[in-house]
Length: 291
Image (cartoon, rainbow, N blue to C red; front, side, top):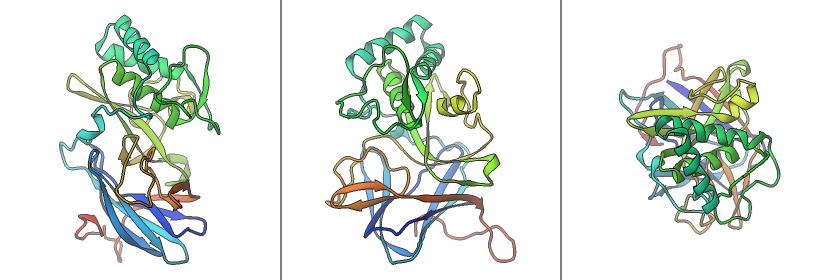
């Protein structure tokens, strides 16, 4: 059992929205405990099968503790993560769709076509965190026809998932936190990756980590950089039935501050450690859903 602890490192606002967590073939988030506040509501995203906790801070540090258990044998990625959806964050513009189909076909289709689209997405970006994203203000994910564009893991994987789905492949956009081996189980922001499913084979792709670590052309691997990741959600374009939440969230990968119908990111410290009960024994208990 692991314990993923997210600490808000700034005075929290009146309301915070946080992901509840998911199960993947690697881990299952089985509970969420909150200190420094209370869970006011747990909201569902019916189309995606996701949950979000609406938190009301009570003053002092706001801390979220997720219980993370090994995944049961045979646990898949959530089926809804692979389901094509049409919104501005997921749908490929016509030029990107045409180009993606052509790239996959020229490569020979199948798994080779997937690898070709991964390589194409990698070739279109320089890893960066730009203030203006390549798809800001667009109605669909645009085609990047030449040169390179600055982009983070969010941007690169937005492009890759739209491209893969346009070419007829099953692809999922998964996010949570990655803990580099050299940081002692600590990170400060989210991370995302792509999962493909074709002919019964599930593969995980992390272009951003290959680029950042200088690992060469991207190959399928969960952790190409030494470390450990935990998924908390999937898919872009989420809707929760509460007037205090924007009608369409891009994604909910970490706690967000809510104010006047808008969201903003919070400064966070995130730690992953073994869950231990007093006396050094592994923690046990009824970990089923949000507590």
